[in-house]
Length: 214
Image 1 (cartoon, helix red, strand yellow):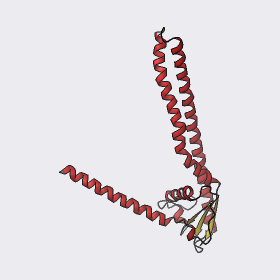
Image 2 (image 1 turned 135 degrees about the horizontal axis):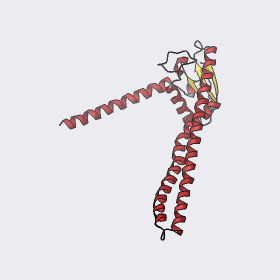
Image 3 (image 1 turned 30 degrees about the horizontal axis):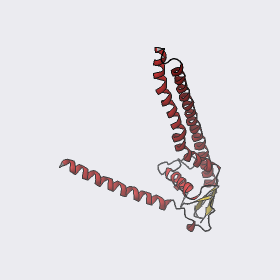
Image 4 (image 1 turned 60 degrees about the vertical axis):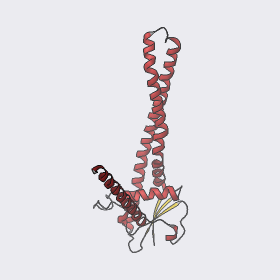
């Protein structure tokens, strides 16, 4: 009886969590509105337009520091990534649409620099990480291949007549296959996981950042 009650409570909690997550996602979509119908002019396909009410929307709500030091909002970055991949495959411009009465040229200059520095910094970090993953993958691939070939040579020449060679073969064969497939997995899977993030930061680091009024 107690177990069934616990299960019922867990199911109820899961339903509530899903409803809360759905509401949060909906609120975020309202907060970060990017629709061509909302703009005064039709956005080119290589532009992403972000409709914001003030500059604070671009920064973390939990960071009280001035714009030059405040942490950039994770919600903002997530939404930009979503719009980048879903709506504009080749981003040349990131356009912020701000109420005319709110605009401030000094604040916009600071934000442009912060965003350019952020995108460039993360692009270089992920580029370095991808090179590391690819390098380790290639090393594992060729090392495993070399061990497997060495085991094959030993089998061909010494396996039947030499006990030490037979023991060495039994060690080299599984080690070679393991290192070979680990390296291949790193080249294919891990590199594939990193690529979309690297591609996003690469494109955004080259994009123009523009502020416009609405």
